[in-house]
Length: 309
Image (cartoon, rainbow, N blue to C red; front, side):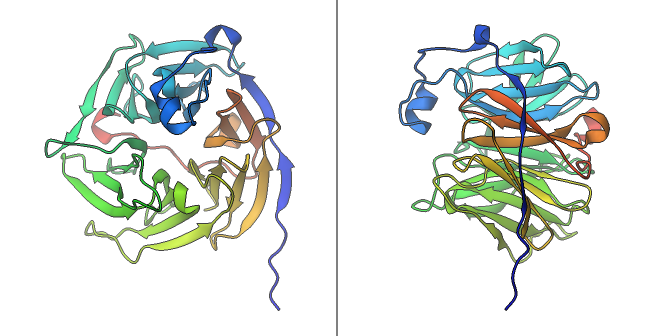
């Protein structure tokens, strides 16, 4: 009988909780009514991404806020607007591209806090609700259109937007497509399908088509995989809200490590930062806290739109 090696289990440490001054205590939100069962929450963190100076940027979905957290853990409010921001990546040193559930893709000027449309609609049709995004090394943008899809409505989509403006739907039958990341050689796109409690593997061909899409990893529990990251050795890091931990998977989809949260049970996303980018930082949304864990390999490079570099 073949037995899988038991994964190493360890606990992340607290890096920085949201200061009380920024918490929206006892404040209702339409987003929480739909996505958190109407529970009043003071924040819901997502979208971690680092700039070149080591500052961490995160989103607060229900209250339309973007924060910068410096390497010492000090928080600054960068923008607050009428939206529901989720995943983020840098367009340039001065602008962030945000996957906004309400407004589509929007662009944020970090210096001024101004938010403006980047891609609101596809052929005049609104998106279901954009969730997360990632660039490849040539400037193609991959993003998920999750909305309220799930096992009963597997119509979530994964799009690719080329630098020339061509928009292709790669997946149209996703049960809640959420976080996504590319393999180190950019030949495979991994997509978290939250309500299916799985991660899909999407082969990418040179002609722009996709190959045989398969299920790479299966989780369990009340809420499935969310944010994804990839390290330089090809290991996939999967933030898994509901379980309160992150999976570290090898190239066969086998868990080799489990990183647990020391508080809360909703690890929503992950980004590499710190010295040599060998520390994984996690958004723990229920407690409004950023966690961290040292890793044995650095994260893969995070790319930007070529024309905006």
